[in-house]
Length: 114
Image (tube, rainbow, N blue to C red; front, top):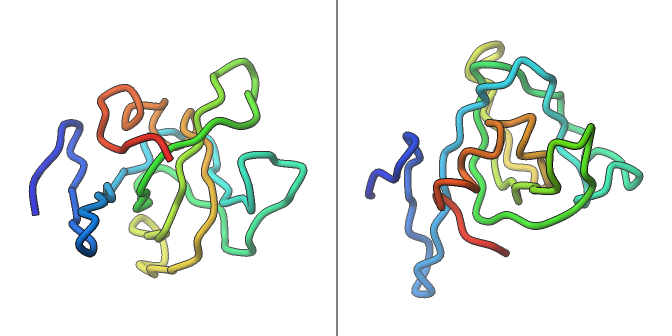
């Protein structure tokens, strides 16, 4: 394991050495986990997350630009409800970067483009 900037944690997976990052949710806006990078395609069915929770994401992609805050979405592998139920769910989906951490993981290069 190696520590990346912005407190992200790199996790090596497999021989392809793809890295995932632990990204704390720093926004006070609710963070939903969606089926795609477009909200019209709906959520995956896990509870929304909030400040103090975290996601594990392996890459970022482009999608809807919500409230003119950018079009960066994180491909989310795990949801950690650190601030509330202490649950960890392993449901794959997409989270809107601006609502997760104001796109910090994208800007610092903590995760790669999908």
